[in-house]
Image (tube, rainbow, N blue to C red; front, side, top):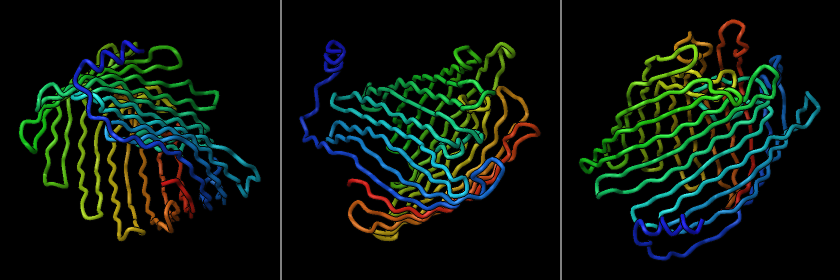
Length: 365
């Protein structure tokens, strides 16, 4: 470990020492929720939720770190039982060496209902699940206009049912970014993916792509990426597909807008080891005052088993809410979420849910 640290320091002069702030992360929240289809049979349910979070944060000009664990206790009025969901997260970023940036992040969820996971683009399954993702990378500024990146991203999904295997995805890519003008950035990426079913290889893919990011104004941007995708498995030795994605963003005067759209091959979907996915998602947040804010979001997705099987499911989501900051650290929120998914015959992927919640919570500033 000491040798590795010394090697990093040789890549460039260290940045000037900065004041470091250490602080605890403490949070607690209570929530009342109505769920129109909390049970697999589609019965409505009233639930009371108690959440607690604890962690540690470090902040400085060159380094940030956040690590926290949270538990959610849900009392089901109709079911007359209590379930517990677990959440953990980690985020780290380091710029202490000139030209070099290191980062790592990840999340872990153990939930009684997979439809509550914050993952978009893949079909939901009504089952208890363990889902985790992790990402780590480094970026090195080669010149004033060129930057190179090496990144690893992994995901794992395990459904606690007898019919599904643990699904994992391991992806790694190298990327070169070049700032051609003050507004335009061009790049190239080479990504490899490995899809596992249990401990056995299910498939892999290789994707070369080109990227472009353009600043439309001081407050908005558009980013595009696309290229061919070579998919290989025992049943499909060589199948050519494509990957494409686009993003549009705006942030100014209290308004934050975002739009993402794409087509890709994804793994760790729960019901399948590898799926193709079409997706589009949009969201908006507006801060009326320092205390009041509101948000809207919507999205559509469609999945089929990779590489080119017919669609198994498609669905759309919608959400809206308002938040009121009562005092330093205290806030109240009212939200509405809708999820509707249409599954192919005999897939068991069809579902429809409406969730209304009122939440009061505190988190250390």
